[in-house]
Amino acid sequence: MKRLNKGRNLRLNKALKPLLLAAALLALPGCWNRKELNEISIATAFGFDAREDRYLVSVQLVNASEIADKQGGGGRVPVVTVQQSTGRTIFESIRAMTTTTPRKIYSSHLRILVIGEDMARAGIAKLLDGLSRDHELRTDFYIIVARGTKASDILQVLTPLEKLPTDKMFSSLEASQRNWGITARVDLHELINDLVDKGVDPVLAGIVIEGSNEIGRTDANLDSVRPPATLKYQGLAVFRKDKLVGWLNDEQSKGYNYIRGTLKSTIVRLPCRKGGELAVELIHTSHGIKGKIRDGKPEIEVRLSAEGNIGEVECAINLNTPRAIPLLEAELSEAIKENMEATIAQAKAYRSDIFGFGSAIHRADYRAWNRMKDRWDDEFVHLPVHVTVKAKIRRTGSVVESFLERMEDS
Image (cartoon, rainbow, N blue to C red; front, side):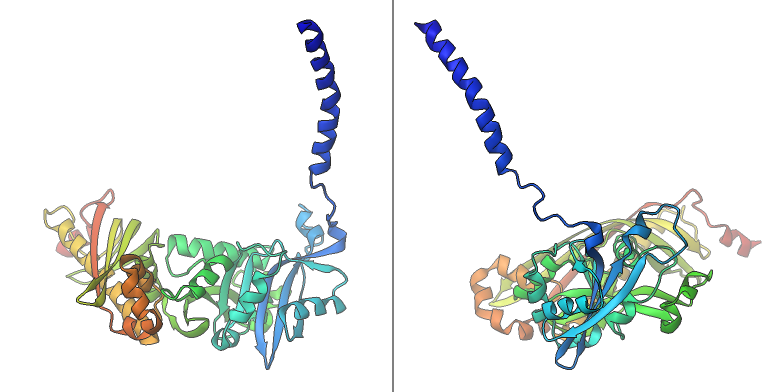
């Protein structure tokens, strides 16, 4: 009897396997909504400018066949064109481009979004709300501000080192924050979070055109050893809520990244006692922001630890003495501290809490934060911020005694 039941179970399992396999195949999504390359135009960058009560939208479109051609084809620029259109809404503006482009614009590969300075000063909340509702857009593209110019002008500059101008902007933004510390990589998700959080105001990297804007949009910009026009990141755009209120210079941008803990490496120059300068390469930083309520008033403590190596000596100094390194460490700590304090003072002048000090107070005492969050702009201006910096120099290089000192003695 047991053998009979076992045989029936085996036959039943064999019969069920094809049915289960068919059900699994039906559940797979497949490619029902696939789009062929010859049916779409791939957008790698969008630019938004204000034109009266309308949006001026610019889009950088890729010539996919040129990108795929390893031989470079006939040397053509692999950007089909920068198309523009206007509309009262974002979607209206983008769809209006179909009157000049033969294909639907595919934006899932977007890498950079540029906002013109005029639009940034007027407010970007409606723009971001419209973008966040687009199901085709991912949130991992970076958002930057065209400083002193239009987004459409930025997108039309051709770059000699990269086939796609968008790739140049994307890679330079990542490299400059990682190795220099004057920019900020902010994607759509992070920007919206900063806007809705009352305890922090957003910042965005600024980009400028150096040189001739007119020549920069022609092939002549690709044929010169020194291009007539280049794209360069310069400073950080400071927002209060969704409106641009001012700019941080490069040194203040470093101070911002010190405080936020996003600076990985940079160069700090220190003056020498006998004239000249000495450069320290920071190789590691760690930070902490702590909020507290004392006598009913908010306070902030910012701590930064930094490690660096001496990378360049342009003065007569002997690093082999017992007091040389501790003295340099104290000077390095003080220089970084002054930078951070100057950045905080500038942010207070803009009445913009770009550091997230309000969020730190919220974490420390949510009841006290609820009492002051609606007037945080005023609280932030008078907020005591105590900055502590501890810097260490790990390596002095293979030559501890500068030959410049021996040159002066001879």
